[in-house]
Every structure is written in structure tokens, then in C-alpha cells.
Length: 390
Image (cartoon, rainbow, N blue to C red; front, side):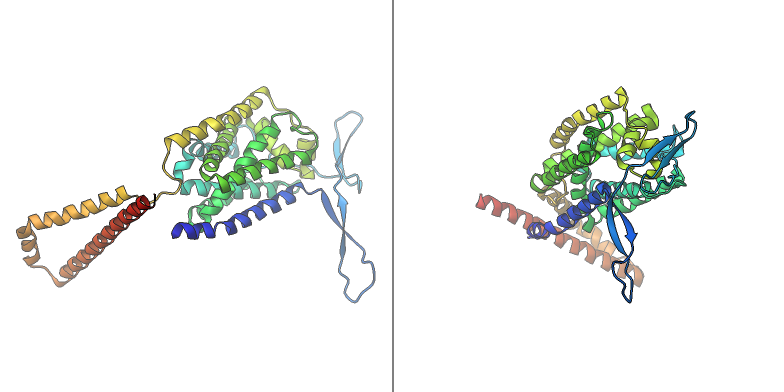
């Protein structure tokens, strides 16, 4: 009965999660900008209307000697101030950089090796990583040239992950964690494929996002129709991506996968000179790490599937019930075999408070014994009923 209730309520959180991901996608790839215009006709109350204009690529102008480089908005000819494009990642092995290295290994390694077995930790990581990606993307695309310090932005993203991790562990957030993990698996696979080639896989920026959407839909479909396959694939893909990112941060610091992530996700005009104008040119080591991490996905997924054969969500099995009931029955047999000892303990002088406490604990134990026996009988009845049906 409980399983049927869960299946009935499944589409609602799935639909909400899919709509949220779709809104995030349109927010990231939009090429339209708004500019207020004068009202068409006079009225008592003037409501400003908006006109959608295509977003123009900034123009880089340099002096004759090449020492002074400025970024200009071609629509207004205004100079666009440029700021640091580290996006919270730090430099070399600074404090934010070390925090990120520790974070990606701490989250990625358990998912890659045993994500299908961790249950609540896995669903918490799904919601937490989705929240961290959204918050990080929102900040890096909206901050001005005087950006936040890297440590502050790192703390904000990690707090968002912690909140999402907690929500994914509780009951109402577990299904969202599973669904978001499927979306993140497609996102991580598509992102690695896009970053394999210098300047991104497809020259047109929007086409790369469309490719990522296809992979995200595939990851989501696997969760819907082949849940175990989707879960082992999602845990392996997300975990391998994070582990590869951590290794690349150690070897190439912020010039490898880190730069590719910022180049792809950061379209802030205040970072145009340092990211978009500079271009993405991965080293051979980064390309090898991307390819190896992609090849490790089926290996890790197969290993998790055969090593951890238990269901993703722990269930109360008949063996567990039998062992619990056996321990309770054993204690009752001990009481029956030693009646004199227990009668002496019952006749020993004690205060009123101790007697009340003893009576209360005995009632609790008897109640637990009755519950365990009823669970055992129910499990046996369901097993016999399933056998008769088969």
C-alpha cells in the first residue's frame, strides 16, 4: 500500500523539479536584454514598457602600444569596467582553492565509489550540488567589477550546499534529490564533452547548451524509467566529474577544468576580457582527465551495481525482524528458566519511584515485544502471500 502511494505522488515533485531546471536553463542561455522605452500614449499612470533587444558582444579596444586595453559596449560606447574573474576559486593554492579541492574530493569520492549505498547522503548531495551550482552561477553572472572576495563567495556557495544537503536528507526532499542527481549526471557528462575541445565543442555558444539539455533529459529519463541504472550512472558520473576536477585543480590549478567551467558558465561582461576574450585552450593533461573521467563512468557504475546489490532505499527485511524477535524471545526464555531470580528481584525492597520506573520499563519492553512479533507475522504473511500469487 505504501509503495502504491509513493508511485501515485511521484510525478508532482518530478514535474516541479523539471520545471525548475527548465527555468534555470532559459535564465542562463537567454540572449535578450531589456531596455525601458518611453510610453506609447499618455495616460493617467505611466507604466514603463520594455523592448527586447539582442545582447551585443562587447568590443575590445587597445592602445597603439598595447598597454591600455578597454572593453566597450557597442550599443552605448560606454566603457565596461573589468574585474577579477576568479569566481571564488582563488589563485594557486590559496585558502579558497584548498577549500574547493577538499570539497570536491569529500563529495565526489563517496558518490563515485558507493553512491548507490549511501541513500540519504546521496540524495542530500544531489540537492546540495544543484543548489551550489545555481547560487554560484547566479553570483558570477551578476556581480560587478568590484566583485566579492573569493573566500566570501566560496562560503556563500558552501552554505547553499549545506542547506540543500540537509533538505535532501529529510523525507520530503529525498525524491527531489534523486531527480536532481539524474539531471546533474547528464549535466556533468555533457559539460565534459563540451570542454574536451579548445573553444568548446561547438563554435556557437548556445548550441553547446542545447547539447547539455539533451544529456540532462537523458539522465532524468533514466531516473524515471530505469531507476537503479539511472542512480548508479548518476552517482558515478557526478562523482567522477568532481574527482577529476579535484585532480585537475592540484595539477593545473585554475588554468584547466576550472577555467573551462568559468569560461562556459560565466557570461558576465565585467569578466569578458579575462574569460571570453582570452578563450578556452585546455592542456593535454586536462583533456586526458576529461576523457578518463568519462570512461570511468561505466566501470564505476557496473562496480556499484554488482557490489551493492541491496535496494537504494533500506527496507525492513524478514531476517532483520527474525533476529530482533529471536533476541526478545531469548530474553523471555531466560526469565522462564530463572523464575526464582526474577521473583527475588521483584520482592526486593525499593522506593516508590524505582518501582514505578521498573513497571514503566517493563511495559515498554512488552510493547516492543508485541510490535516485533506483529512485524514478524506480517512479514511471514506477505512472503507466503507472494509465493501463493507466484
